[in-house]
Each structure stands twice: as structure tokens, then as C-alpha cells.
Length: 382
Ligand SMILES: Cc1cc2nc3c(=O)[nH]c(=O)nc-3n(C[C@H](O)[C@H](O)[C@H](O)COP(=O)(O)OP(=O)(O)OC[C@H]3O[C@@H](n4cnc5c(N)ncnc54)[C@H](O)[C@@H]3O)c2cc1C
View 1 (cartoon, rainbow, N blue to C red):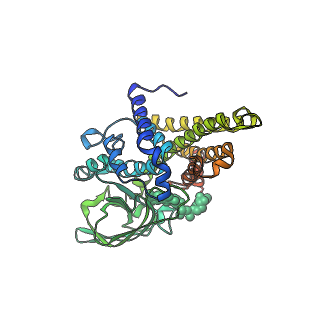
View 2 (cartoon, helix red, strand yellow):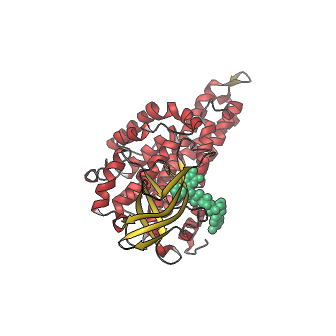
View 3 (cartoon, protein in one colour):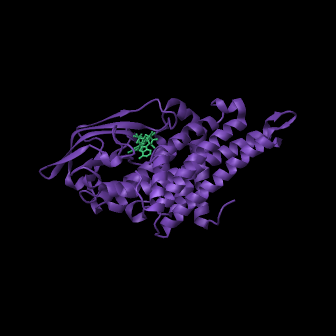
């Protein structure tokens, strides 16, 4: 079915599949209904090493290459995108940024806890008036002696109400991307308040929050990277993040394929299993091709990263295709299930709701197309 995997990669994939079948998939529908995953899942993810993948063991991580990371995220996406998102953000966006840019003190302070699941991270870039145009953000950090005072608001922040540390992007200089600096802000800092956003179409088990900063004081040692280098850090982080979203989408598409093939073999209409009707096979074939193509695009990005090659455009391609493919696959799977696909007794409706956000966050499908177009032509069409 796939390209060759090393023995370690195959073992990690099996570990993830078993973990998902035991700890995630049986609970996903209930977590979705009550709008909260079991918080204990974070510790379990840490225990099995999934919150420390690709981070060096000396820094508190569990090592491993990016293909292994994608294999795990695919399995988590198959089980529950709410859980996949917790890992993508706390590990993929926060811990990896600290590993890449953090001072020795910042790494020692946060990485062992983030990688073990003792702490969670969130990535606070989006604001009410700056989404796709993230460089227009207005949250400000101003110097006060050797400290910084942060004031402003963030919205749609995954893990926002559950995280222990927020990677916050704030304006420390003039307008545009050069005036942005990144800070690691403990979420119990005085002046920081949080509110959970309810009523999401999908990812209902995942905590999505608004953060409000009213003169939140942090020392200069909380600054992550150079002053003015925050936006570059955000872009580099999101490029890898797009691979992890895409890997989760492959899991959604694979879950849809498994469910649809299984159902088509059991459901009988016109005197034979619906799998024997050509138009049902057409739906199944389309899901299968979408799944395989998305997986190969994701694996290409992981391979480029593991070989130290540029990967940003390929990550945009993988994210664009895999997110749209997951939506198509879930929609096709509902068609195979007929009316039963429309009620929550079967997983395919949830797959559609969960897949939909992947075409929106970490850069919408339009933004990915503009990034790919710019790489092809050298012309910025934003
Ligand atoms: C569940 C969820 C979780 C999220 N988690 C996080 C998180 O953890 N951290 C974080 O910082 N953010 C997070 N986000 C925010 C997410 O990244 C933004 O919603 C996304 O970047 C889009 O921004 P926006 O919603 O403001 O839409 P807008 O930027 O207002 O876009 C609206 C529409 O206009 C289109 N558009 C905008 N500009 C252009 C252009 N130049 N050309 C063509 N079309 C354009 C867009 O493609 C879109 O269709 C999350 C969002 C959701 C829904």
C-alpha cells in the first residue's frame, strides 16, 4: 500500500494505531458530544512519547524523524482530530519552536514538561482583526525596565483555555512583519484572562479559546528569539505545522475509506451488497485515490525536512490537497452510508465536520494557493 518504511517507522505507526484503537477512537463520539476530550489523554500521549517526537532526547523529547511524526499524526487524525490538534499545536507549533529558537534556560524550563504532557502549549497568533493577514496584528509589548508589558487580544487559539504556556506574537516595533516579537507567556500570569469558544462545527472535543492580555508582565528572558524576528519564527513554524495538519487529514480520509468500504460490504439494496453497485465503487475509488495522493504529498514533505531540504511550498501543496481531499472523502463516505451517514451513530459525519476546519486554519486554501503561486512565479499576489 505504501512506500517502504524502516523497522522503527513501522513500529511507531503500529504503536500509534494500537494507541488510537484503545485510547482514542472508542471515546471520540462521546468527547465530541460533550465538547471536551478527557484531559487524561494528554498524559497518555506524553507517556507513549507522542508529545516529544522529533525533539532530541537530551532536551526531554522522544526523538524520531518527521516521517514517524506524520505516521503518528495520521493515526491520531483517524481516531479524533481533536486529539491530533492537541499534539500538532503543543508539540508541532510550541515545543518545536522552543527547541529551534529557545535559550538553554527556556528549553530546560519548558521542553521536558511539554514533551511529557505535564504541560500544554498554545500558539497565539490570530486576532479578531488579523487572520490571514497575520502581520497586521495589534497586540503590543512595550518595555518597562527589563520587563515587557503585553496588551491585546487573541482569538481562535487551540488549547487556549487548557495550555500552561502561550507562544504569543506581539508588536514591539513599527507596522508590518518586522515589528513582531515572540514571547513565552505562562498562562497563570496576572492580567491574562481566557474564555472558551463554544458552538464550533467540528473539533468540538478540543478547547479553542480567546486570550485577553491586560498589561501582562514578562521578563525579557521570556522573549523567544530576537526582537523583531517573531513573524519569521511564526512562518517557519507554520510551514511545518501545515505538514502536521495535512497528515491528520490523511488519517481522516483513511478513516472514511475504512468505514465506507466496511459499510458497503454489509449494506444490501436491490438484492446485493451496495459494494456491488458501480456508482458506489466510483465513490470508494475516489476516496482511495484522494487518500493515497494526500499521503504521498505529506510523506514528501517529511522526507524533505529529514534531509534538510527546503520544504515550505511542498508543505503548502500537501496541506491544500490533503485538507480538500479529506472534506471530499468525508462527503463521499456520507454518500456511501446514505441516510445513516447523516446521524452520529456512524463516524463519517464527524469526519466531515472535523475535516472542514483544515481548509481554514494554518492558512486557508486560498492562502496556500497564493503561496504556491508566488513560489512558481516570483510574484506576490497577496
Ligand atoms: C478551530 C480553529 C482553531 C484555530 N487555532 C488557531 C491557533 O491555535 N492559533 C492561531 O493563531 N490561530 C488559530 N486559528 C485561526 C486560523 O488560523 C484563522 O481562522 C485563519 O488563519 C483565517 O483567518 P480568519 O478566520 O480571520 O479569516 P480571514 O483572513 O478573514 O479570511 C476570510 C476569507 O477571505 C479569504 N482571504 C483573505 N485574504 C485573502 C487574499 N489575500 N486573497 C484571497 N482570499 C483571501 C480567506 O481565504 C477566507 O476565505 C484557528 C481557527 C479555528 C477555526
